[in-house]
Image 1: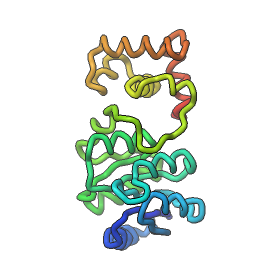
Image 2: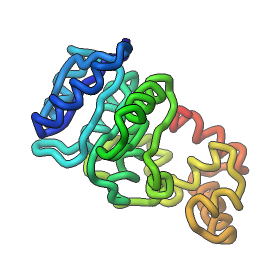
Image 3: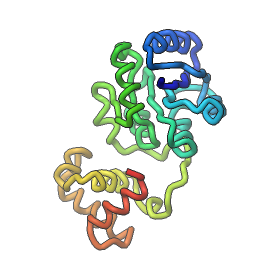
Image 4: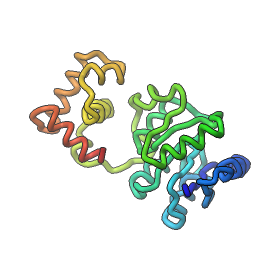
Length: 213
């Protein structure tokens, strides 16, 4: 049984989602919250498997809540479900630890499949959101402590380092981040220098440990 916490500031949305999700025999809505702060208060008590998270909410928005959940409760997975597909929201949410990002016009069957996929450890992005998830964004709403090694890097260098850790070569990184290969080479050189590393293999190994990939 997949235990789900619904986080949305609209009561009617929460009620509709609860009815929809509990029509699936393998899903149970164990709680509701009207903002990110209330969600954080309930997680240690309810211990949900999945938090279905809206973005724009009072008190604490979904982006800040996602970062806090990823930091404090790493075994609880966040799947964003919202009407907003702004580049900044998508990129920040995914960078801060969301395991998926869907829009509220997602078909019920697709939402159920996405929840099951995230529960199994996969990442789910709605149509057209993959490129937005890779984009660099300003400093996140929530200040999440980073290891001192990562604090030396710029947001774009962090993007490059993550892709290096995934095994991507310079051409693949350039394609993913919409950069030239020469620009990627410059970023790699800067990363190695800032982190005092000998080669990209050392960088990839360090990234695996820091990002827990």
